[in-house]
Image (cartoon, rainbow, N blue to C red; front, top):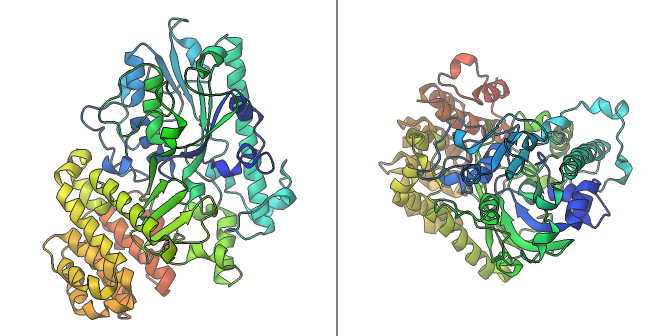
Length: 580
């Protein structure tokens, strides 16, 4: 597992014409299968790893928020998938990263903080094994260098040969950043070669399946942390020993175009080992005697983006065939809202500066502009997601079909994203059970959020009822809807004014956002008041997120001091520093 690597940056996925050279990954591919459409489900590590280790849709577990503010329990009756391998007689070892948002299942591993070749330490040399290695040479943090290093740190990959994605500006700094990232990918590939050599030395290669993949997309600006294709689509290559290929319908050097995801990897390994799948798992095998590419092509893949450190988002996507549908539940937000760790990349900061200076074209500017409620792309024609088809009448039926399919998935899965995080965390001792118990509430919040998709005149009465509801989450969604519609919501400004005295800080703050958009209200005083009354660190973080939006879009100056944040949690200090 290599950290923060999208498939887009490997020459293997670009017919050898572009991207990092990975001869060892290519060797796996030559003796196995390349999955052309593999998804990490989440665009950031802890959420993606939680999906991977559980085989579950992480937003129903409360496991899709990064970094976790609470270690959530596993769903009742489910263990992490290595537990079932270990129970069946496998030696299980991890080198050496877990990074899950759920409680570590100690019974899943023989060794957690092991070393390369840990399988060699199993008590019986004939004992089957499951070994995980995470390589961090490609991690996003490796691109946190100073721009001045372009003159002093040479790259093996020539920046002049870089082909910059059309949503990035083609600058010297971006080309250098790409080249430096490609070098890191090549370094990680060399370690894969060492692992394969150890298996050969032990006489085990012909008996061992090897799965190579990225732990999420990334790591270039606008990728990791976002549900765009480079943020969630990862390389997945599986070496299949020759004796297994015919049995599993896998030809050496084959390419599988099915839709697969991290929810499927645990079920796949259990299925290959002949172990019955737990009912609580949401994924399904992608390899097996009873699995065909034709069946995989017909599957859907759902991806999700929630909080990344101090940055709140609520984005869900559905991939079906060649189409990708995105639902953005805070449509007035841009994807570019400041996050401390994101903007440590010099290229990221350059991109933002160029937008402010008006130096970008339309494709490069989209990242910094309101994302809108819906996006629809035909990835076979538009792999970079440049042309949003959601407003094109020729695709109206496709839009309706995918909108309905995604909504049904979110409701059926009891997606906790419809709650402000501070609300569902009150049930953090059992978030999966919380979602099931509040299934009808989640359906109602989903229906409320869908008012964003109607003309304002049709949505107005539903929004008004939400603003006057006894349920604070209804009121929160009502205010969010007003912010989403913008100027037409001035018709509800009186209703919004009443929420500036709401007993929930996050409702007050979101009402201030809406009034600033539709009625020109200066939100600073109301937001600072809301921050003072926040009942928890996560509620403070929600208010601070609204403040960050107001700073960037309204040029508000908050001048916060540490005493202004009464309740803190991970991430509040980063927002405080930004809003000083």
